[in-house]
Figure 1 (tube, rainbow, N blue to C red):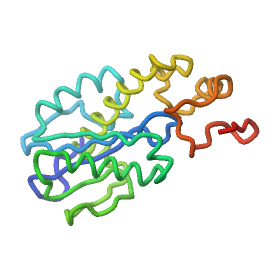
Figure 2: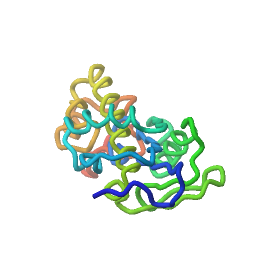
Figure 3: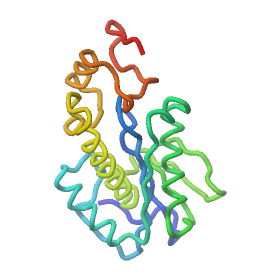
Length: 199
């Protein structure tokens, strides 16, 4: 059973990202503040949920949250500042977009940077422990998936609507055959060493 609150503060914000390990597309983060009355037994880490469950939960979270926001950081920026910094930047941007200023931030994972002197804590596997982080993971994942389905129309040969930019064999085979697009992260190892690309 996921817990509602970690810090004891009323305006506790949970934040999480999606797409960190992808070869293409943005890294997307979300931030969510839930009301103290929030209950949902179906909500869990987005990776543990089916696509149908995630898409069912998203409008519930959006309706019941006190405030939520998301942010994309795109490949050109990821290549400049690296994926860890891009993930944290996406979280910062999401938190800054909220309609309420959080009194405390709980972050999925073990890396974060201070934001506007708001106290925070990082929680390993937090998306499977706290409802607000799980809610943020659902918003981040579904928002990013929708974006990847959209750019799939432009480059269908990579099948992003299915693999969402992750390094599947099919995605790597397509990179080998068709090369890279403006949506690929040039700083990532897009192919194994024996199949290097000329970027």
